Image (cartoon, rainbow, N blue to C red; front, side, top):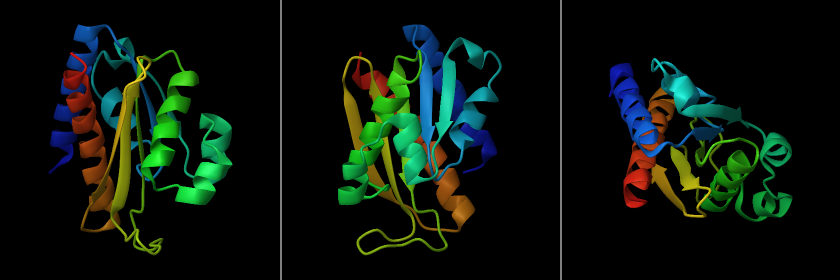
Length: 165
């Protein structure tokens, strides 16, 4: 999977959002804004991309996205519960109708019991109230884990959009 694959996926996301007259907000942790970079590389993305939140620390997740301290304490930043709250916060803090969130352990350090390096959680949702979340485990270097996470975030958004039809 190369950079071209990411941008092709971002173009597909843009087409799907434009067709549905929807805009996107992103909430990113381990990907550090890479999803936002991929979508803004698409010409005309201002028609369907509202904004991105890069919330790398727990404090930033709380302050910018309203993630509950109790959620972080009970489940950790890398959890489906947290990314669901990140989606809700991105929707509340933007004009978008659709949001995605990603939080993970890209490595090489950071593993905790039950969450090895390469554990990444995703969520996709909309103002309709429908939110789905999943956890994936990726192998590879830090860069490879992050690239795979960006790709899955975009593919998962396309899947979510199709499921809403």
